[in-house]
Length: 434
Ligand SMILES: *[C@@H]1O[C@H](CO)[C@@H](O)[C@H](O)[C@H]1NC(C)=O
Ligand SMILES: *[C@@H]1O[C@H](CO)[C@@H](O)[C@H](O)[C@H]1NC(C)=O
Ligand SMILES: *[C@@H]1O[C@H](CO)[C@@H](O)[C@H](O)[C@H]1NC(C)=O
Ligand SMILES: *[C@@H]1O[C@H](CO)[C@@H](O)[C@H](O)[C@H]1NC(C)=O
Image (cartoon, rainbow, N blue to C red):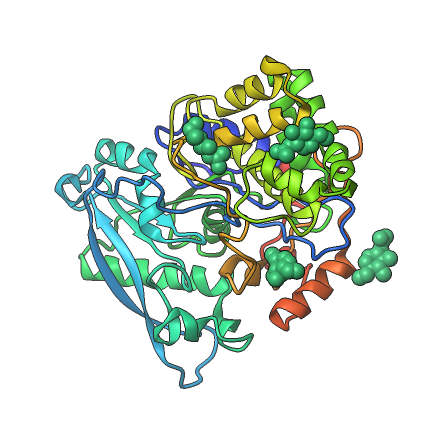
């Protein structure tokens, strides 16, 4: 299996996605906001409004849950406490190689969330493993799920110092250490290891194949934006690609969304306009500004592009097959002579309320706070993104590193290193081959 990744990060990744038999982890992030006077949202993967665990059937696949003791810092010999990393093991029943010994190991590089959630939504691995006689291992990423240093989430996320061991390099070293120990334990020294991952986990899979070639023979990196650093790809790539998913569905849907931002701004300026918007969109509380609403809507469109599967799924939210088609149908329908914003509400209602069980929408559901991806985005994972004036349906936005950095200092007391990922893992050169 070849090292596998995507050059326009999302386009190809979405194609790979469609090939997956079950939803898998993917590229998710908060869209940029428009003319903001308010704090800007970070680009993120599984960020606000993504609710892990919604409708997840954890019993779909059987595995055993185990823990492995990891050093807090693989790169120093300081006397630091260790922590327990969670990992899931399945498929032992058919684990058999050609020569009668143990077969290969399919190793999922956990990303920024609870590992059970990814295991439940990565059917591709579970379904292909038996054909290869492969053992399945899902390893949780440190600082997520139950793999918390310092004994608890509160202690791990206390401050910049306690968070300083949350890096991709430490995570890769965890995986390498776990694989090496596990193989020795299972007397499977000769079992080839194939890495899998989606989204940030896909980046880890690709980078691990580069950094630890003696540990893994291949990596399947799905929806892995390893080129979304510095200026390797045009900064508009992500939002242009998402916008194209809507434009492809219908030009009028694209145009309606594109014109809704101004309509929201205008409405917000009216007397009682924020109250009116809050009611139109069935929000639980009154909006403080229109930016909150625009961010919430933008998130829905981005996530919809990421989970635009041809079949019903529940990875981020319960959704019908081809959800963008459904959203656009609502946005375009002019029944009852509905105004633009009513139709936009009808559209995003598909994303946020397909189950029909939500009483009101809570924009504070997952408030900005000390979350793991926010920290990673403020340290190593600086993925600059802009929204173009013409090709994007999102509010125009130009990435501004200076304000990005200021926000990180304010939120986490840390200054990002935007060139570190390409220094550590490369990108500029292999971009030419992808
Ligand atoms: C918002 O204001 C418009 C008039 O500008 C009105 O037609 C509409 O009913 C109002 N919506 C709500 C939910 O108050
Ligand atoms: C909205 O404004 C209210 C009152 O001004 C404030 O208490 C609340 O924290 C604000 N909410 C957000 C999310 O900014
Ligand atoms: C969710 O959908 C149900 C059923 O269509 C509807 O009654 C309810 O008002 C919707 N919730 C929101 C917040 O719009
Ligand atoms: C970027 O943000 C800084 C504030 O952090 C501001 O001073 C500067 O004018 C901004 N640059 C552009 C091009 O908007």
